[in-house]
Every structure is written in structure tokens, then in C-alpha cells.
Image 1 (cartoon, rainbow, N blue to C red):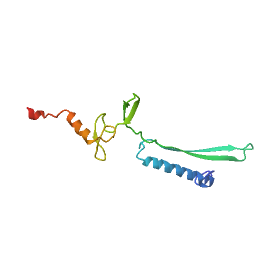
Image 2: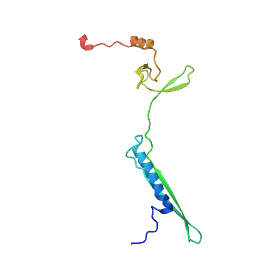
Image 3: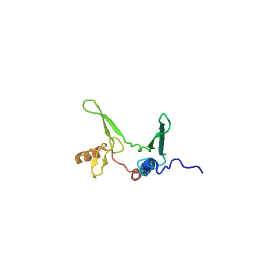
Image 4: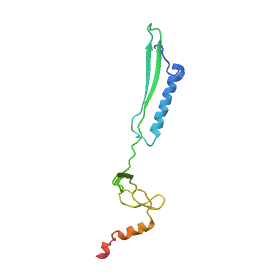
Length: 140
């Protein structure tokens, strides 16, 4: 068996192994992050660069560790696009699921489609202006 030239555990006073372990820790944290895709590959690349001097008796060696992690998952939402009183385009996040649809917000209040609380008088007004529900089974 040939003599080992470099012991990776002790090279550069252990810094090579230390860098590798730091990058592996980053990979493990990225894998455990529920905001990333689980099956995306991750990489740790160790680059060892040798630059010798002119007489070739010594060589400067540098070690670089790079990690390729999975990016965070995309976050999606919807914007309701409209116009203000001056005709300028506006946008607001759609909260109700459908434009112009009211919903019960997390506080238990009635809100419009972009999350503005609706006054109780407006809620009653919308009930009056909505079409009546007709039970066709009872009607015959």
C-alpha cells in the first residue's frame, strides 16, 4: 500500500475537515427545512487549489468549500386589480378566495375580499340585496 500524502482529517490543521462538516451541517439544515423541496439535490464541493512557486519546491494550497442548497419553495398569492377615484391602477391581496366575496376573518368579523372589516349595516344590506334561496324540493 502506498504512503498517504495528505490526511484529510488533519490537513491545514484540521481546517479542511472542519469546513466540510460546516457545509454538511448547512445541507442537513436545508433538508430539514419544510420550506424547501425535499427531493431537490444538495451538494458540498471541496476545491483544493495548488499553486507552486517558480522553483517548484513548495506549493501554496487553498481549500474552498461551496454548498449548493435547495431554494425555498415559491410562495403564491393573488392580487385584485382595480382603479382608484383618479383612475390610477391599484392592487390589493385577495383574501376571500373570490373577488367581491365577503368572508369571516380570523377575528370572527365579516371582511370584504381584501380583508377590510365590513360594518354590520353593510352586512345586513348585502343580505337584503342578495337573491333569495328557493327550495325547489318544497316547491314541487
